[in-house]
Image (cartoon, chains in turn cyan, red):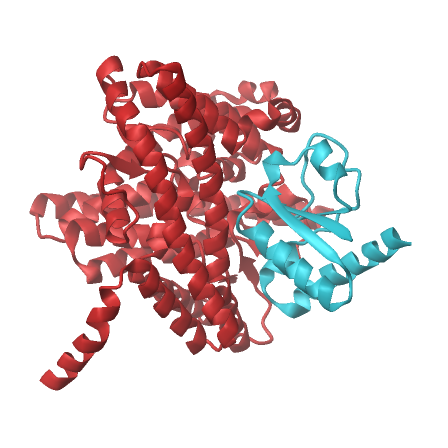
Length: 100
Length: 469
């Protein structure tokens, strides 16, 4: 199973949209993906190390180097399938490279 | 005619008397169906809203019941009258979405956006449906103080237009802050950026008189990393509970109860916040589909909730530093009645500070400290309204003394809230209030025009820099 971490301001709105969309689309594409949504200010090195992919809206400055692949998921929030497709394609590519 | 009214009454009266959760379940489900959302999704959204309303009521009940006695004794033992419980954004948002007027104001703002897009007065399509609640609070405040839907609608339209214009003005700054290319469509119409004009005044003051302070800016990300879990919701709940327990002379056992109850409530508030945002999701998607179908072939910017810039560490560093400052200000500020708790991390303010100062941390903190009292005063003044609205949707415990109130200490758009209170009073026909309101609105618009001028200057500089690259 691939674990994805989404993060936004309060950990309730944007990050949940990303979490739900990533889980749904990746399952449709045949991958076993589970995502969590958190407040970006609570993200630390220990938390990130428990995940396979970090999917913030755009790459944040967390004060440490992010040790896992980062996929910027902002376009998912635009609510237009044509614009979010590249994010899912990128995610799929990363998942494939991890699973190898 | 009479039979129609009688028929309508016989249908709607029983539904209205069901209370807010079932009522909003019905309204939201039907509305989503009308927008062409699949019926299972529509029902799922409606149910989640009803559950969120019920859940948030239960948690407000736990929090106010636990703190009611302590806050009364806090007033007695310290002589400082801070009796309003600060529940933070999630309960206020939820009870605002518990009012059917929010859907009406949403309709108005969606129409404004579509008209402005069609007339090419803006380039932003707002898909942040959930955050309409900020503007709905403005409209509901006018209704609360003035009972005049027409005037409330006018004020909502005015601020709605300015918010959309502001999203265009800020667009190049967002690209700069995100280090994103010009093709990046992310912007926002979020209410918290309506503080920009006032912040800009102080920022210009800094440019002229205190520019040397900028060299003391420190690394925001490093500070946040050091603060670690101490800045998280449950930790804040624990030490504010202890703080109130000690100052109100509670026993060690009662103090521990306060601390852990506050921690639990702050965590649960945002969990329930997530349910109810999920509840609005089918509606948001329905409106976005409707709008983008009508605007086919045109590229535009997309208005999101504010946190697409939450990756900037300055937002959190400033909020962390400002939290204890706000607590001190709350203790000494005349007229303030709120003891900061749920809203002590000022997310309703620091993103605007970031956008105007473009990440100059010392400026963010100093201007933040100057601006926070406005939030506390606004939070105090809207407390009767928030409490009454909570009661109206059944989200307020019965056993609490009627003097007990709830509010939100750092709610976005404090200036707009104060404006709404003035306009609400004015709409009852009081000449003095009408005069004050007109003056206040004139000042509000003038300072926005000045700000727009400054932002256009900034945006020209961005465009030039782009060309010289």
